[in-house]
Structures are given as C-alpha cells and as structure tokens.
Image (tube, rainbow, N blue to C red):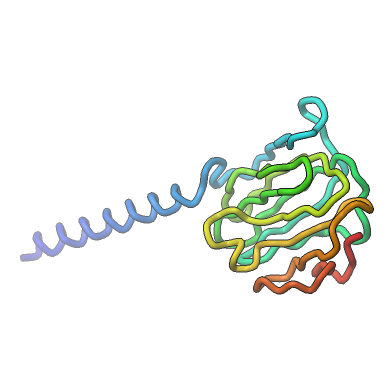
Length: 172
C-alpha cells in the first residue's frame, strides 16, 4: 500500500512538473528567461544594427508605461523594453511605415530593445500575447504634426485618457 501511494505521488509530481514546463514554453516565442538585448529593425529603418534615440518602456501585468513626455519628432527610436510583470510579455508597434514590429515575447525580469523609424502619424504600442491588449496593455503615441487626433493612456485597465502618460506628460 505504501509503495502504491509513493508511486502515485511521484506520478502526480511528474505530471505537475511537465505541465508547468509546457505552460512556460507556450507563453514565449523566443528568448524566455533571457535578459539579453535584441535589436529588431522596423520597416523604413536605416542600415543593419542601427540605434535610435532611446525611450524606456516598462511592461507590467497589465499596463505599458512609456518614460517619455513631450512631443516626438519623426526619426529612429530604440524602445528599451523591461518586463516588470510576473507574466511573459512583448512590445508590438503599429503605425505609418511600421507593421507589427515587435520584440520577442520574454519572461519577467528580462529586457529587449526594439528599434523603429517613426514617421508623422499615430502609433499603437501594445502587448500581442493573447488577451493582454484587451486587459490594458495598449497605448498610443503621436509623432510630428501629421498625426490623427486622440491618443491613449499608458495606465492599465484599458482606460483612454487621451494623450496622457502615467507620468503626467503629454504626447504631441
């Protein structure tokens, strides 16, 4: 009887371990657990290995904080993205000349760089992990004078306090 209980317990522990491993692998497309930087060039960018004006971005469960206030002028920017949430996240950018440019999905505590060339217009920054955008990981920023009116919020919960950032600054 004791041998049967030990075997059953060992089987349950092995199953839990396998499920945990499978779940962590499913939440990441690449770079899981890595804190190394990857530079990804967006459409319209310069030559290989280009770097741009740095902008810090912090991902949490479930918000995106962009540490930049004031207006952005058209040009090349490098988003230094840090994941401070317990879940795996990524940063995806869409807008004029930039279509679904993203960091790989990466684990908590890691950071990635994403270099994109931004033109006049409105850009959406969001986490493309399923349901994260709907949970509040979605914000907008405006570049130059040719952008559509509006904007977004970097606060969680999907709020839309137009043109604001968590630090109180405004987008152009």
